[in-house]
Image (cartoon, rainbow, N blue to C red; front, top):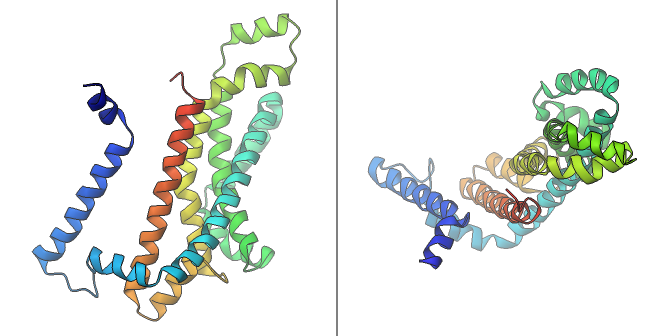
Length: 252
């Protein structure tokens, strides 16, 4: 009974079930509607091609992951730091937040041509794009979480001589951790999407570049293989964050 409860509470079970449903629906649609391979190839053909082309796929994946993780880390840290600054300086928040909302009202990938001009076709432009996308999500969620600390507890710490930074570190940041982890989770798919789209618009390497070139050559199996690898990598990345969530926000 204990083992069954642990298994049902595991976050892995819903993921496995959803993957099984997706696989069954995919293969079932191909058989039922007789979809030709050039429109939708079978999963077996995609996986077989992925193993055959594993070397090229892994090189492209490493390039994309480097850009996505670099921008993800940079955007998360900057977003959290800016949230703390705005919390400590409310007049500054009234100036910065409208500007941040205005910048992010436009899809991040719309800035890709500008970033490619400013930072070049290398990894720097994609890292900057991902940082922009992830940073705003972290800023909004972290600022909301930091403001959730109980005012009585804040005043109590002030009465004992605690300064603003100490109150943030000892009280406000632990209270904000659920919001921060939520922002981290939201940032996972955004970082991969922005990195891949940025590569499709201009890059020397990466899954996005591979997808673009394969599309130009009408090599649909390579396109689907790159999409499959990107999806698996994103799921693994998200799984790591779920584990971190359980460790950092253990009281939830």
